[in-house]
Image (cartoon, rainbow, N blue to C red; front, side):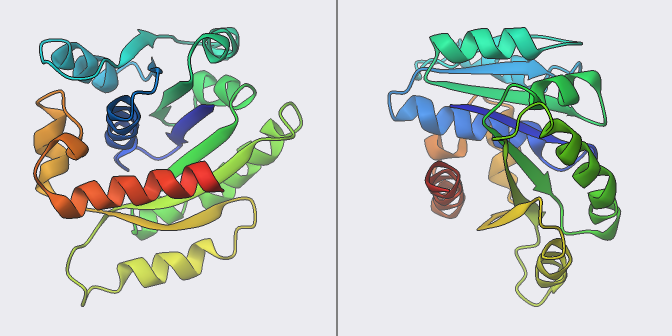
Length: 210
């Protein structure tokens, strides 16, 4: 399975989702590789930090510009390929979409993040001209943990109007453990925060089952 985690808006937790899904899959004994197509190299740095630890291996490569052939080749050699595309409308994002099975779009529940939806939907429609079987799933990330804040409900209502993106029920909250684990080369499934562990496990169940 080839999954691209991407958005044309930065700061939505794209690399965080990538490495946490990779750590979860590795913990299940799966053969997983991250294609870091973001020139910031966040996922690559996480993989390098992880190599120093006695944890299940997550392979990684960096690929830029036209990544289609790289992604397709790796898809033949690994059980799971996770593509971390940059948080902007880039050549990497668009060429990756012609090769992957699923696009997972993280959204913060904020108006500036939701404002990119019309442009993103247009990119998805164009990508389906080359990849008609592309699945698109959206997930709310960095969501407030305070139940009195209604941003999540407002975002869910807004996203419901965009038929090209299926919003998953899973929500990834703004928890410090995600930031802590990133700096340690770990996933939250390898930390001691049960709520964060549950979030990532439920997210993967939805991705894998939909």
